[in-house]
Length: 239
Image 1: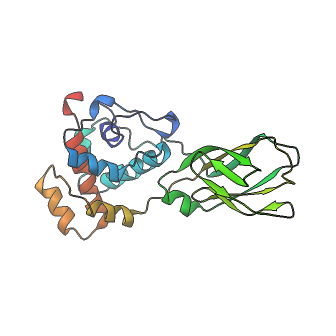
Image 2: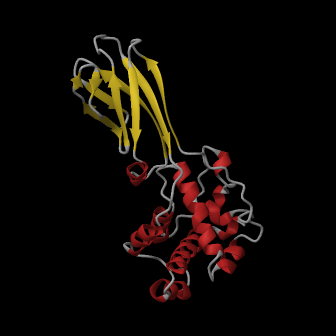
Image 3: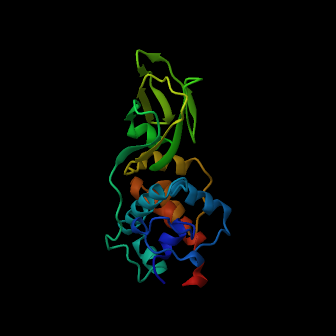
């Protein structure tokens, strides 16, 4: 019986990178309450492993510091939440040019806030330049560019990530490259509270609902919301 609450927040799904995840017990999660599952979707979005791992860690820390720490302890009497075992990557933006004429140079520009607003903390994408149509395409989108001299205009290949190319663009050979970007997430708890308030909640205990409705502390409100979702989606028979 270890890291049950983490496993529930993760919906019993393992992480691709074990260094940024605590141990997940798939049997700890049950989707028997549709409303509670929706609450988990708000708390820990599944669009990105790094994002959901970082969010789960923050949510559990809120609960540990709240009046409901004993409820978390009841679910997880031998948890590892007091141990800083997770390793989150540093923010990074990189490019690998995989096929190109020798004159090509690519410049990267990024906006972390716009990038995170898309609901992901890490992405890697293959891109190509079509010089016949003046188009740059990625796995996410495509955009046109103009050329002045030998320098292109800016092209967005993912929200918050733009490229600009320098070349004579004379070759018909494929221009291909891969861009990887990682941003260490920052949880906007005011936004999270707003999203939580916008959906019908399910309550495992009337006291949790009372806290949500009347407690003046936003942290206690979110802790009540979180522990209710965890309790309702926890498969107690797995313990």
